[in-house]
Image 1: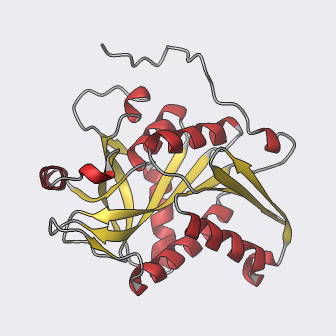
Image 2: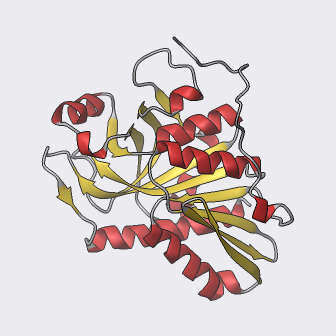
Length: 261
């Protein structure tokens, strides 16, 4: 049975995040999938002279299994939330942010490479994600198996331009989103590579689906942390190129979020 319908009302609906009911959080949020990148962003925003020149205040609260950091200066209010993992939990966070007033979302995360065109430390800006997870089908009507769900075209273009202005190389292509990190088999890697995907993550297709359903702008930046393209797992979590790419991407995302708040 196809349970999808735009007209069906859910019994449980996302609520505004209570801690922010009386706070101007702005309209832009950055969803940071890893704790190490979340802490890097928080530290830089609070301590950097670049961002702190017109600094007003910041808050840090716990929300479910994540933390939410708000940063305000003279002209901007931005929300950063993380860490999180997997489509269902990421969607729960996103729905709560949207209910609180967020209209623009930037995803900052990691991914594995399934194409030899990308290597550890490379940056991918996904134009779309092929869904092989179970959450997005509750937000869009699947007319085919493994649908390709687009990021916001204009918002992704603007984010790409920010990287180009700073002369940071990236690849713009499709990725594959899976629920099962330990079931990334040879057959699946080859199947989704043949569909045009160059990387694999665990959240993007579902987050893109929610943004489309809720009519919000969304774009993503993923840093390649490991490689599966040879059909053997090659990790790069301590690789200098990967560490440097994470910091570069985080810096661009911080600037872009402040400009779009």
